[in-house]
Length: 147
Image (tube, rainbow, N blue to C red; front, side, top):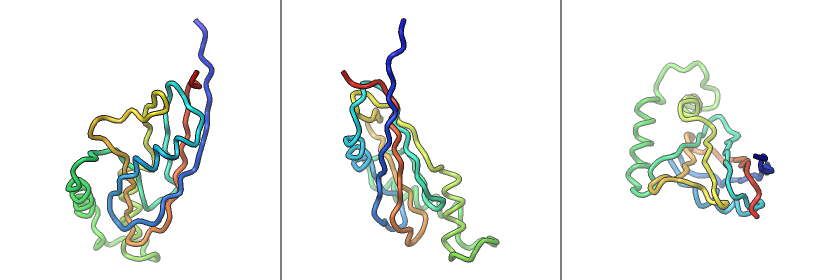
């Protein structure tokens, strides 16, 4: 049995500034993947280059899920806590904690250059700052080139 040739490609996705909360970015990621050569099977690794925002996979159908996720994170990681790091405002250190809890990356399987997400799954940018600014996301696609 011979090993199939693998390709590794990358593209950057720059997301516009978004308000604090959980924002579905699945369509933006899908559009960014179209800039890369197609693969028959592989993995898409998404890495967010920021310490006060995060990425996660969760339900993409009911918008109440987004509000509940935000409310839960604010309950778990309150702004009014005796943080030592306060020089960037009251939402900064809680944003770092939330980012550490959720993480800066997700990996999704790919087939025929399509993300293999579950029926109700979506990719979220979790903006933990009141005014976080633009966010940079690197997408690395590993896979077997499409024939």
